Each structure stands twice: as structure tokens, then as C-alpha cells.
Image (cartoon, rainbow, N blue to C red):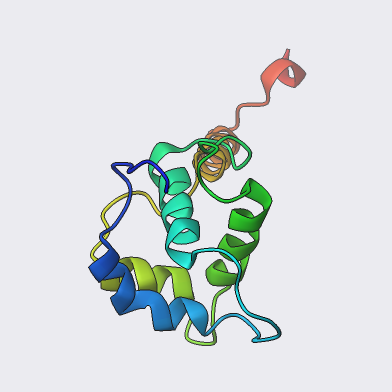
Length: 125
């Protein structure tokens, strides 16, 4: 039994989105971990912005959680991912990107703005 976190969704809400998430896995052998805990770990990382290797130890292993996140995040032909659909259906409010993704996007925006304004750093001296 793991600790409850502010980023968790209720078990009832999770049961509404379980079919979406389970549909992404090939059924080769029975699942040995609780998919609810995996999904809540993804929510924890998205909400807190912590690094993938740093969620609390009572969640499943970070590599397992990241693997599910990667599968669930792949865009489908309509452009939306299973994760986006699950977050929307669950009513979850919060950032939909990790802290590292936000940092990368912020740095990319800053770089684009500098290029747009012609700033060249020490090259222009």
C-alpha cells in the first residue's frame, strides 16, 4: 500500500479510463503491477515537475513508469495521444509536460526570441 499524493486521481475516475490505458499493451502475460499506481506516478511527475528518476520510492520503478508514459504519449493518427485522452476524461488539471520538457521549451523559446531580434552574443563584438 503506497502513500496518497495530491496528484493522484480517485480509483473511481481511474476505472473510467482504465480501458483506454490497457488498450496500449500487448497481452503477452498477466500484468504484475497495479496500473493505477503507474498512472498516478505519471501524474506525480507531470504535476511536480520532478525528474523521471526521482519520484517517491513507493511508486513503481521509474523506468517502468517512464516506459508506460512513452507508450501512452505517442500521438495517434488524429494527433491526440492516449495519455491526453485519459487526462481529459479523468478531469485532471495540471501541466501536461514534465519539468524537463518545460525547461527545454523555455530554452527553445528564448533562443528563438534572441534569433528573431538579431542577438548574436559575443560574436557581435
